[in-house]
Image 1 (tube, rainbow, N blue to C red):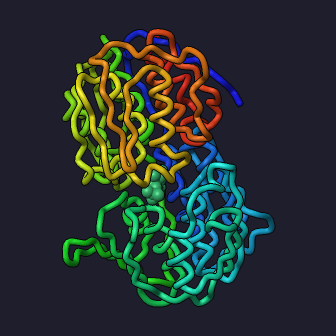
Image 2 (image 1 turned 90 degrees about the horizontal axis):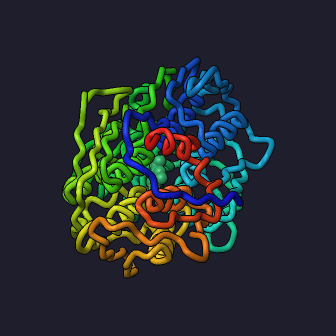
Length: 438
Ligand code: S3P
């Protein structure tokens, strides 16, 4: 455990670059690892979660080498040709690695054991076990449907049509990845849209994938026994990492910060809309497309924020940004109400309970409900900060970073019991904070 006290800081100024998108980095390594031939990836996030995916893809037979900062070369093994891993797959803290790779193994004639840290070992896997079992995979999970688990793939697997019972891009992607090596057409019906990086990137790698609409729901069809062709991928900056700086610059008086190269896929950009609704001053500069994803630079200036009722329809487009939105709400004037957030209870931690406890301990006024938080803001006055016990980050990178941002807008600073989890998604977070406020 590495504790750290985040002290109040001066205005955020200048221009910073956040690391590559985590979701896109995982997928780039997986799909390049499945293609026939050499792909190059630039801007790859070199966080622990993504490195867990790289290590697993190596065990499946892909050759993966780092050439320099964010630049990686991958020689794929080909769909259908995954090798039997020799050791258990160490998934660390990464739900995305686990669920997507379970999908991959499900339609190959191999078996794999998935293990993870205490946080990951408490997270529900039944949501992927169910559809993958229908496709023919056999899975032995720990009681409660959690890791460690052993998955034996089926070859050939059986194509299914699966209607997502939870709005989850990980479940959607697991089924689509299983469909890659399944004869026929595998379909996923998505009542509520979730991040679509898998669909975009698989098309780029040459998979036959169609996205349509039926009765107001999205239907994604993937043609199996695909051959993926290699491709060069440029990974845009992670909007979920940029989120911490968007909130920091919004709440620290005098700030005028530009965050370069931020991915703004509409299935991810909910926080931008919600912060603007609260009165944030965020300008999109030079909107462009990089690697099939919309990107812009974001200029964020300090502005007084006002509490709102967040429309639950926007939840999937900012699912990972709620912890830091709660911090913005704690500094806003008036009350912010959120609902429809049940999924936050099964992330790296129970993020509703964790943020309610953390914010209350630094002096914010918070009420926790089954499916959301209600927060009464200070109207811009700094929070008290942590006085006695340190805030618990609970193996959750986003709790640690959100409360670090709360520390910037506090009187006494915020002490966090363990900042090590930050390295799973944003290893340069603390140094960038120093850079932006220097
Ligand atoms: C992710 C999907 C989301 C998100 C996670 C990354 C992905 O999870 O919270 O950080 O890359 O597909 P769910 O699919 O469980 O909502």
